[in-house]
Amino acid sequence: MKNRFNINTRVAVAIGVVVIALAGLAVAVYIINNDKTAVENPGAYYGRDPDGFSFSVDEDSQLGTAKVVSATQVRDSFGDDATVSEPKESGVVRLGSVLAETATFSVETPQGPVTFEVDTRTYKTEDDIERATPFAGAEETLVEGIGREAHYLVPFGQDRLSEQQVALLVVDGKTSYKFALVQQAENMIYDEQAAKDIVLAIARQANLSAITQ
Image 1 (cartoon, one colour):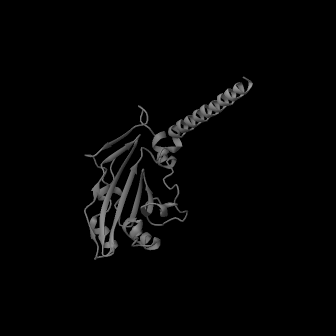
Image 2 (cartoon, one colour):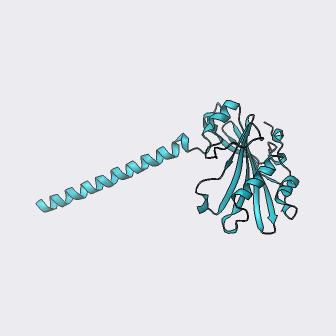
Image 3 (tube, one colour):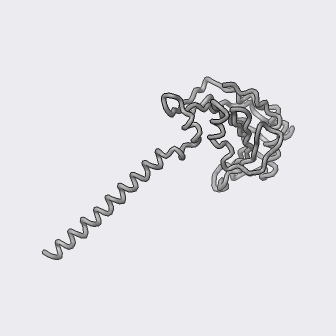
């Protein structure tokens, strides 16, 4: 009887430990899923509409991102032997009070295909854009002559991903821009410096006034 009691006690304790651990895990998952800092753009959350944080996509609406740079300007920066498609528009994504859009150019080079993307995000005020930290993760060196401020972004740890990009982040007025050259990891055509040169050449031709809100 004593041994049975000890065994039952140990089983009960073990079950209790497992239940507590699972409860702790559930709490941790809840906190992570509801943590505002985990939102892709925390500035969008804090700049939410009066009815609260919202997310929606209007595929039939445009901000003008496809007019920031033309297919001809993109092709010229890649070289005359490249073929560039007209941009594919994502439609307008609403993240709280922030409006975002992407224009994607498919680029065929003699060495293989790559993609050039222009992302834009417009905010209600310039204070909102500052709170959104648009240069998070970017290089400290300032790129002169584009918008109010510009920095290169080469995402950390992307060498483990199927796609790799080199981007130039630009802020002008109430809008942030990302000009990015995206390549497949198994077919890297441009090294980091060459990619930066191409991105910069395209960004310097950008019509930053094309965005409307």
